Image (cartoon, rainbow, N blue to C red; front, side):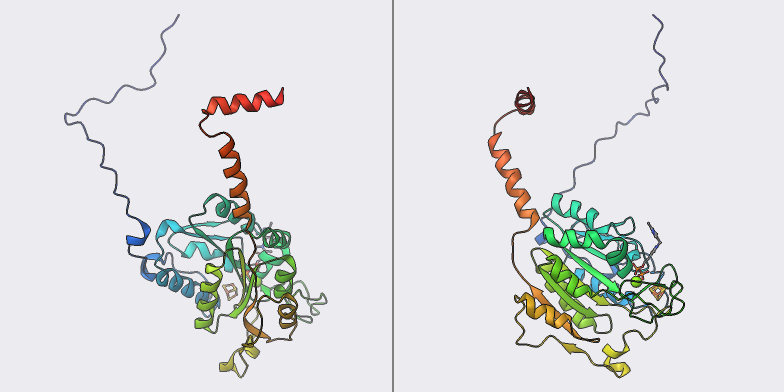
Length: 320
Ligand SMILES: Cc1ncc(C[n+]2csc(CCOP(=O)(O)OP(=O)(O)O)c2C)c(N)n1
Ligand code: SF4
Ligand SMILES: [Mg+2]
């Protein structure tokens, strides 16, 4: 039998043998200093000057700072689009995933990591065109996460195509004579699909955006925020009617509105633009996270004390 060749010679000894590094002490989250905006801001955002998305990003940083979050507990997921570049600009864990598929990816993170909160950011095209089905199914499953759609009523990244929220008559590269397809109403869709937290805000009112983000994050379930975010390049002035600085009106949800009343929420969502801003709907029901954990715990209880091979054997025996 021939000798087995050693692919490389062992390194010559240089004297001192390195001692393994001491493991870092584990400091509980509660005792750690939260991140500052400066620490969490990554690459310089590549959005056009004046894009509404800057304001949403700045408020996300503010939320992180205010809630004293630590790096490994922040997860920012997005699909594809100008708005979906979001995770690039956050110095923490994040994923810039396939167009329209941010929610399935985020669902996996949420279901497997109950210790962190998943934030998903994206655009109207990503959410309601290519990702339309995922939106409905993630909402009906009530998977714990916050989904903030930065709605600019256009496809910005691909330079001005009609989006599912573009109003009738909008002239774009795909509708040179003006859009003829009826736009969807994101708020109505979210409520009808089963989202348990549905809110609306606009990038021109920073305090309101932060308030909605905080409320959404505190909600145990699928929380959806439609955040109007102007595309100054391809749909300038789209939201002027909602901006008091541009002669518009910013009307909040009436104080007497019952957020648990689905029909009342639907009615609010039916108001013509600029409509209302605030929490339209909020309901409490068990999340998929909780239900799955119950199944896992029940199964783990059945095999408690068994060795891995014994569990395997049990499974094989069942298949006989
Ligand atoms: C599978 C696939 N189809 C189409 C595209 C091209 N595409 C990239 S972003 C985009 C639309 C993005 O619009 P939106 O989600 O509204 O984001 P915005 O740029 O407006 O923020 C499209 C159609 C793609 N990248 N992948
Ligand atoms: S194209 Fe529009 S959405 Fe994209 S970065 Fe520029 S202003 Fe923002
Ligand atoms: Mg868009």
